[in-house]
Length: 391
Image (cartoon, rainbow, N blue to C red):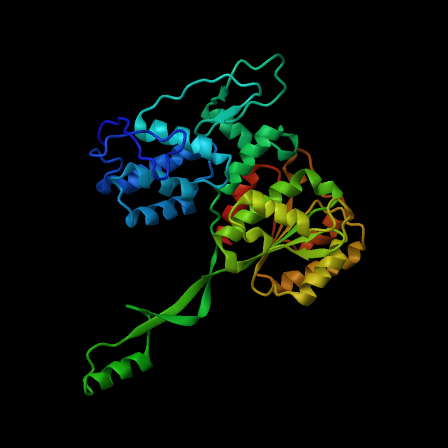
């Protein structure tokens, strides 16, 4: 990339506040290194707090394929439209665009309210800071601090640290185990495809030129996630639902999510919003029994009666505090274990030292659980994503 210099912008659409100016005869992005340049710019935006994830980056690349990448104005507006999710992202986008493409150094400005700028994988420092803020606080931490945050209990985090965990969950790309489908696909090796072979032979006048073959297709295995939103799970429910949002975004057609408490509520459609904030707002409006009790046995029975679990990986996220009959929960877990491909129970308290599953609900359910895992930290959710990929 050539040396970056400002250029004068035209009055037609008007640049953003941080849009750099580069001479029109100097290309802002060269076509031969387009992918590397756009990827690096997206990383810079994510470090600044703009949710420029993989999907948004791909949208920008597709847009630049039909635009003039040597025109700085077109590159600026294409990125602004595809990479920004809300009006709050626009000032950060302008600053990053100016710094990345225009060589403009970031400046420190006085502010009447404290602001935290997250740089790369950085953690906003928690805790109260006394006195008047002197300016913009930049919290830059080492890789060891990031690793420590990954393993911390989300219930003990400050709001700023929890927001950072939620940002990392939004960038999580959970894998998914594959299953063999009944449908076939053409292949170079495999069983003989008699119909295709005969049709091609007839087209060639009866001469067999090549034997056609086929293999079974594979499809992502369905995952059903039941999230306990009762009062005892309140410190973890929001983070669990954000993990569910990442699952739905990775495989929309092979994921179902339900909330459980005093009633069973399907929230898959609400979690299909691309933006995590909008998805959480829709989920909050859809769930009528936040912070109530838990009748997991009754709701599991309703789920098995009305919905399909055969061959799926069923993930139950709950601490096991059952207000209903533990015998009913045990009977429904036994029924579920016969239908599902695998049953995974996620208990946030399992990540705590010395935890023992002593509640009646956990004792009734554990004999029918294939994997009993923790769900209290980002590292635990990453481990759960790996289990869903390898199940």
